[in-house]
Image (tube, rainbow, N blue to C red; front, side, top):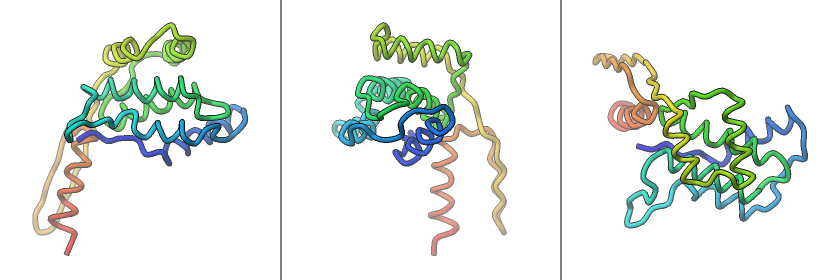
Length: 165
């Protein structure tokens, strides 16, 4: 199960970065911001059009960077969107801040396209796992080594089967 970004989460981080680093706060074009919501979720016949989470993360980054939905902070928001999306899906970008920043600057200047961005993300991430322990009485369930997306699936299952009347 792929965990997509919620616009409210992205807006929270966008606003936080503007407060921390300066700039004019606000959405320049509401329509362009709404496009963000669909950029990684494209479907046809119920199936994802985009091949993998790296292509989806690249779509988020590419469209925010090129559409400039915010008055200021678009490139900072690109960094946040790609990082958060991959993190929520069990991947951590494993490059220095300087390298990641240079990539986004190249994306903004047109030196890097969506396909190159996808390849960079694919080659620069590592999978990580969350470790949790869930105990249910009288049953005991212990879960180890899960990707975050799998954790959400299990949480949904537990809620439906154990906690809902």
